[in-house]
Length: 431
Image (cartoon, rainbow, N blue to C red):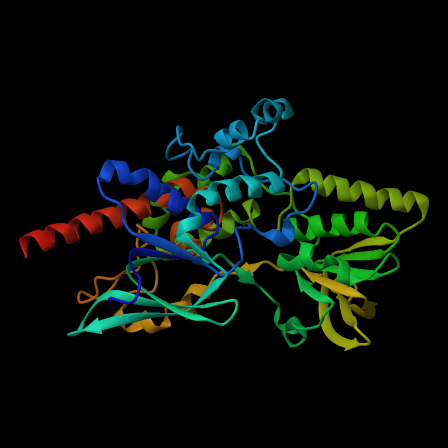
């Protein structure tokens, strides 16, 4: 191991989840009397949170009080309030009278916090393999292999990993053969590639019925005022997000315990009953804005923008950089082909990316799902530790993929890391 960097913990990914881990480790260290050697590997060239959706006039959908630290340590120097203070905007933000900063500002807050850890983050590297290092039938270490943007392969070893890679774009099956079409983009790429979708006279489509779809629909209406833009959805209506106080308690950290104790069959039912807090729902104010704009076009007779409810995409053809879609109206059972200059898929994300990363560890796992402390159960002869973040919704509840629990979850994971480290120290001293 002498020529290979060795760590107590390596974080796979450096988005909000592992940023919260880095902060929690930094703040735990004085109380624990030791510093765990750690680093993070991030494939992006720098810190950015959902860069493709950092659009003007978009806001956080959770209170700034649920930032990276406040629910764990309200006095932390990494709080959103301290960020405002350090940037001399605290009074001005208070004057806004809002708990919901813009998405641009919140990204800047997290980038500000991430700047503290530049010496521990290896940007521009993608982890390509996580392998067990087996010695005498035991695994105490993991080998992490990564590839930099210029193709250089690197290797590191660690006792623990925390996987926080976020979601990967969900591409509906009918679109997968056309994934590389230059004018078909996923919402995660929208801001970066929106300008290639066509000019002022373009005909564009947005597929989806959630917050991202609505925000992109509005952005395209503003970006190309005389273009024709369709919002296509299988749903009958655009549904408002349920953010009422009693319902919002499912995002409280203590609800995780209740959810985790609930039998698996009941968990699925519970998630279905609360889907309108997070999936295929839109802020009511944005729904009202879109409705008003479409109504005004009815008044003026200039119906350039359309919401097409209960429409399913039944076929796709491409030619001359254009995308033609067969739109099946499920109400009238009629089908019409429409040709678009560009199509945006606001079809969400899947969160199974960790499974392929961990495939070489499968023989050492006793279960695929994490325990209450977000740790994957391992065989008795494997002391290497694997923690999962943002992919445990079916065991830890709807908040798992959201910002709401970052502060408390990071505290639980880091406390477990230190507890294991203390145990190893005792074993070494008594061995």
